[in-house]
Image (cartoon, rainbow, N blue to C red):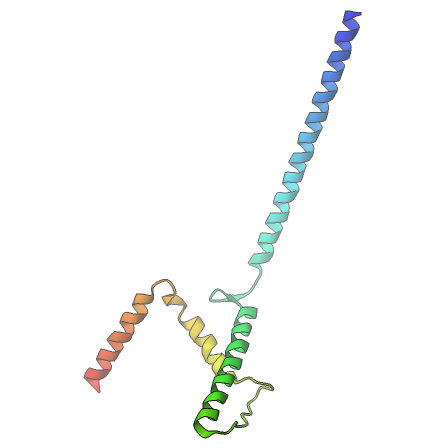
Length: 136
């Protein structure tokens, strides 16, 4: 009788151990699947085309935003100085002035090397002013 109870206990323990091992294998497989998914998303992020660290969509957004802001400021300036809202037609339909958007995008891209060190840009400006005053 005691031998049967011991054998039953041993088989129950073996079943429990087998279940735990199976659960560990399943969780390891889930970890592997998750790791593969993160690798795939990293690969997708690397495929984006950038210009000086900016995506095309971001540069287009800057162009549109600054074109609209430039149009609004230019219209307000014309209204204040001449007292009349002028018709400002350009190559774009709607309230856009493309030259302001293009200028902003060029400035954003061109000033990226000064992003980390603003003092360099400030010192360069002072140096250029001094040279201009001496030469002209």
